[in-house]
Length: 217
Image 1 (tube, rainbow, N blue to C red):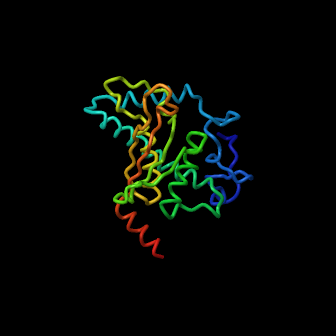
Image 2: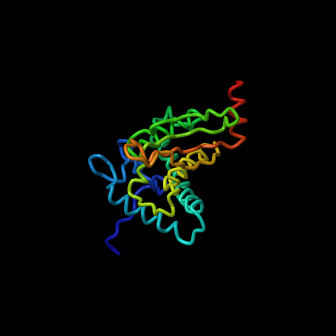
Image 3: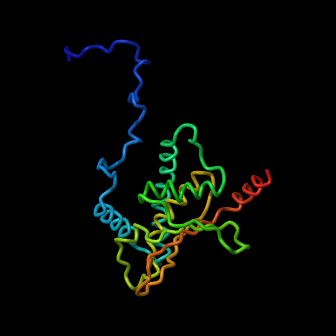
């Protein structure tokens, strides 16, 4: 103990968090330091299959399983929103201010970060009685690629986990919404996208009311 040297200077001048000279912190580093900064497909398949197996214990219906997957994804969306905004340049480091900006942020930024590409489509409901519904389309969700669904659970769509992430991003942006995943691909021979999934985003009434005021302004 006698070999320890006392710290020189005022303790207030020794901050606990030090920033590197290039201005980038650990939040700017990819979790995987490979050249392409991508997670191993085998690792993801194993981890996600274990998550689905854990969520499928003691369920009463397919809806219960999808609800659990949604709940698992929700906190990821909240944290991912903060991370992506933090990585934006200071001038553009603001949360989306309207529905269209938010949905384009999810379609491009969120999808690019999670899956390495943008989502395949973004549409608004054509039903005039449902102006609060929007659809994000993914022709081949990564989370469904490694999942074998039993015949008695053919209606199951494990992309409910991604729906939870989308819901978390919406809630974190102060645009509360209910997001569900729906399989629309046809299980027929020659079908180009049999696993096509639509993420139905239904915004809360207060969001639509606020959107109306912004439109008037």
